[in-house]
Length: 359
Image (cartoon, rainbow, N blue to C red; front, side):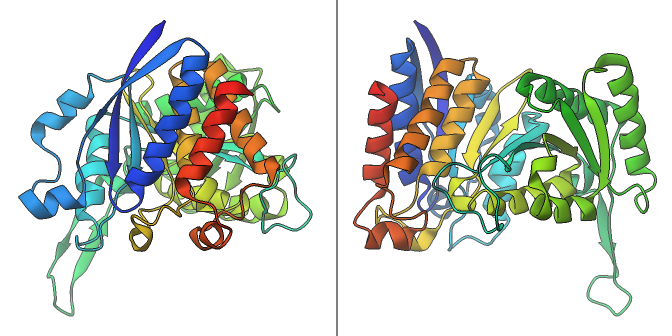
């Protein structure tokens, strides 16, 4: 039996509730395919910060490196100033553990509504590979003459060839692994960001020609990407882009696949420890009410299993979620719909875990 060590970061608000259901489902699927997940819970988040003033101990990164993967609930506390927890936990883990890929499947599942007219599951099924550890988000820059009429703020987008190449390599390999359209689209802005995206475009074609001749290469400016994601989402297989553009287009992707309540993502270090999470926030106003939708967290667990190489268990989780969605037992994706429909977070998790264990 394969055994894996998984660090659990439930976090804030409804994070512990959705993570509880995610763990329930992935453990059921793993057990069915002769694998076991040994989980350890960590209390990093708003409550710990308010009680101790500590966000993430210096020893935590080294400790987390000893796990096979990290499974996150949500970060964000109403009594903590925005940015403290997000930068101190999420960004610190991403940067210090070199999780240089943000992987975002954009997939419309049966019985989930999309706001795009006349589009169905056969039209919306692509992946965004976002560079996750460089670019504008590293915070290079500064402020001069602060709080004067002459104040200047500078934040710089910086990429090395190595950072671009390793992201492109992962994206090309993802397109090859998916074996859908075998197409990779580079999303950039070569007409304005002429230095950075010239580097991206040259590296893109160099790598494609030399190492991935079987993968069709395509390029589009980020503004065109946002239009076509709405008008013709079926055009895309895998999209690769830098940190800032990826942050923006993946939220658009979440909306066209049905909303934040179903969107999951991974922060990937292909050579190290990766972290998987639902895309939505901590929804603190629903804390403890057992009405938040856990599907996004469950899909994050499916990604975790796939990353560990437990592809049969991962497929089982996805099929269990689809079976549940098609069963008609889910009154809606929002907390309000779940509450008014007489369902609950735990009931949804129980039903999907049952499908995963037996279907």
